[in-house]
Length: 427
Ligand code: PMP
Image: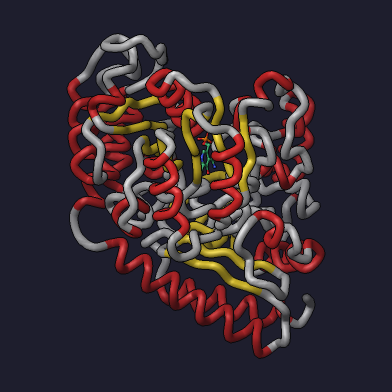
């Protein structure tokens, strides 16, 4: 494949945008090479500026669960745009998507919309602090909740890909209020809570981690967190930015049957436009301004185009059973990849839940950040570039998850498995 135009565009971009990108992992730093610049995408495929076509497993890092340029979403945005793009005043579509979202997600009465997953998590933590009157938070090593200061402590995703899980610029004062726990280790969480009795406002977690590859919770872990939070008056925040409206209509709360106190959303809920949201029971949500004292706001929050895209997306997901179809496709891919890698004698682990899946080149089960970090990065680089050259697009870092879309056909999945069979010889 030729990447001439992508290379030229990347060179131009680097002159005016730091690293040539507006979000670090896009720069291919972890895997080397030149990032591909995207021209357009449709269904299960993405096309770069050089005319190369790829089968999509990133899907804008999650949102495009029904494939790219999905017609009902595009039509809704076009119709809305004709009537103006932003008013900074209330619109009916905000209530419509709020009603639908609240009806799909268990255990929440109200929702507030923001512009990104970062904003959703940042606001959820402020709300938890305001509601409980306590300052400290617990987060898990390798979980990523956006780039707000409190979360850049042993963060996953791009933060770990770039070797700065603790970012310069985060003050010691902020860092000291973030307590760090090990994913899937209930005893560790219990210890931290006991050492900080009466000081912890909330525990924030990706209930299925997706930012150190995909790591599902071990049996009893989420239930154990729920019980600890109840016993110590701590609010449990599920960051469902990746998992919300992806693993089930009602996200992980529905799929695994554990309730959170505040739930954060992003990605799918915006249908590919910049949207985040957080939701909770009424008594918690009414603590937000203007009904309560916890301040939170946004000029473009509830933007009509974003709400129209999100509403069209949720309406599609609310009918039919795309989650079963996605599960079946992902399971098929999982089995196919496991077979070819095992037959080729490649040491690896695969983690999967619903339509989230990741491949780790290591020999022990990947259950937390420490085990995810043991993956062989040289093998991952070869794997990534081999796939790209075969027209298959996965995230350019081992600390990311693959997100399948329902636009993928079984033929696409077979092509992917076949490509991996060929790449396996080079790993
Ligand atoms: N939480 C999780 C679980 C995420 O995966 C992400 C982004 N990948 C965020 C929060 C931050 O969302 P955004 O990039 O929209 O700010």
